[in-house]
Amino acid sequence: TNDYIDSLGNCPAGNATLSAWGYMDAVASNAYQAIYSAGTELWVGVAQGDGSAGYGSVRAHIGGQSQVDTAGSTFTNEGWHHVVVTWDGTNTKIYTDGVLRKTSTTGDDITATAGEIGIYSVNHSQGQWIGEIDEVSLWSEALDLTAIQAIYNSGVPIDVTANYSDNLVSYWRFEEGTGTTVADSSGNGNDGTVNNATWDTDVPG
Image (cartoon, rainbow, N blue to C red; front, side):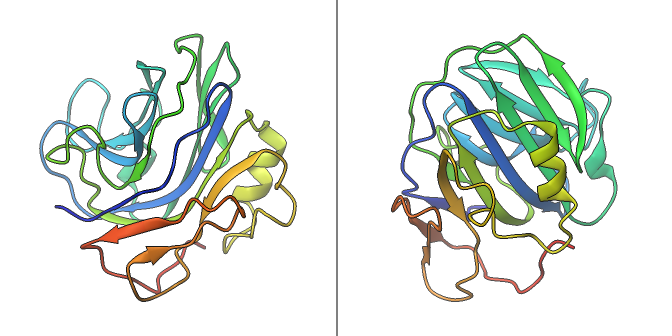
């Protein structure tokens, strides 16, 4: 309930993409579990209750404005799922498992804000992720469907620095296996600090 990664540096200002793999183990109240949170500037999570969004639906806040993939409920299935949220200055798009689930003009310019993984960065009593998170990456551009599907369809996650390094801001692979530091593989020095979490060898794919 209090496992998270902080000291990650800021999310991108302006256009952005967040990509991550998640495995949600358990549900609690009618709220959301956070995969990544830079306040409400760039926040991505999954519904964990039976509210209007539906359990397993992805929700995103862009510049404090939100939208929900009400038709998705991808995380009702056990196992790993790939989540991508993009903002191109006009549209917010939510993708899960390589499929575009929702497009909305709801959103606002993102302000660079310190991010955390696995918890709501504004209030650590909310949004705790119950499960596993892997391969979290941030770009200062909105990736297109071709790139998103290529990343998803790679099976065991590919190293995005090999083909998608342009405008890559941060990339946490969680490959260390021990210790309290998560390295930023983008080369931008946004290493994170592990708080209470347990390393696991399970990976998507």
